[in-house]
Length: 292
Image (cartoon, rainbow, N blue to C red; front, side, top):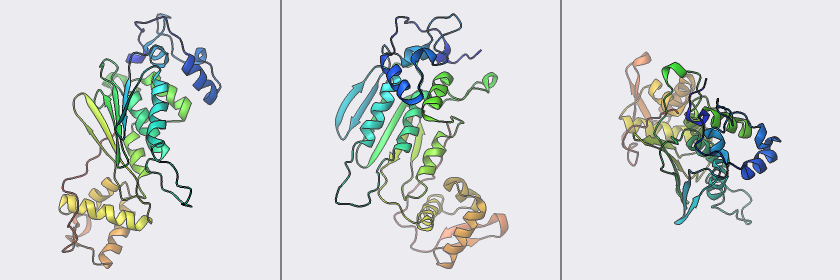
């Protein structure tokens, strides 16, 4: 039996599903009565049903370029409002043949669903979204979720809700939401980040300003990593760039040929450093990634 919060009996039983029924029918041709796990073991509505219902008591607070709004109702409604609010910030310029999306929809989908699915619904605080043309921050109450040892099969803090979004949007929820977001930035100079306290989890998404060639982007990221750690090994660079060690060595060899870096040691003990004058303006502090 799944003991996650969304499978337990809802304190509210008079529920309607007008928004969920409309949106789910549009996407996966299933009415609300066909959504799995809306009932607890008692046969009464579950907390998952409450989350998806029009009577959902949890909210999301959104501030876009200084304009604030509070979104209530179904978490499905809150999800789509987050997408529309962030992705709709920048209007296409008809005079430009090619434009770069500051916030590609696939990135916002990952971040928004991650916040909703891993949210601690025992905490009354809302999900908060703060975005402008420079960055977007999505904060979820509850901090980082770690599955209980006796429940290794869980895929999220709210496993029923995760399965619902998997059916709706095709998400896998295999503990790699942050890695998926990071992968979307692989061709850009920007780097997303994640931070958490005991009761809050925040994903920071810098606006994408340029898409460059693979080598130029990876070279810049490697320089940032070497500067941040004051020297870095192949394994450290590979870990922070999500490149294979073999491909990392190829890039490092090319960078050595361009006199951008040099190394000390030999074999696995190689440590790479920036050549003189290459560390100015780089970030100070290691880039650490956490997986949820």
